[in-house]
Length: 135
Image 1 (cartoon, one colour):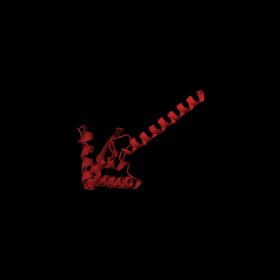
Image 2 (cartoon, one colour):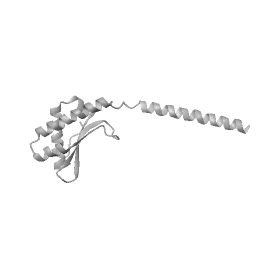
Image 3 (cartoon, one colour):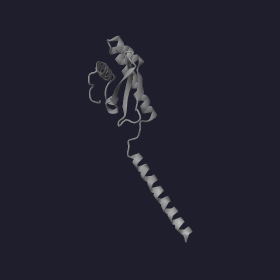
Image 4 (cartoon, one colour):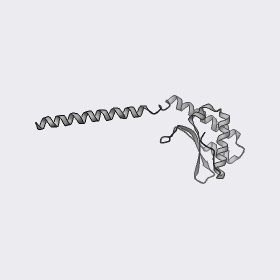
């Protein structure tokens, strides 16, 4: 009798565990899929072009140097939305300014406009002015 009760309890535990595992898979599928390695590589390449164009457009040598030393990032983990951007050093202060674009805006906007936006945002951030809303 005791063995039968243990078997029933074990069976119920297995059913609950199986159902819990299935619901987790459903939750995972609700999020949009991450970009493939090819898409990520393409976004990184376009961001490099944006940085090169920003260097070309920059008139202040300090801004050129910051963009030359910048580090590109694509799809940072832990953010609400996918972003593409560059982390730029600020005049030997040890501080960093992160200029980023939302995934959709980045894909839809030409390189020259993105470079102009990046330079404007960087200038505002260095001056302590508020930057624009996320693009």
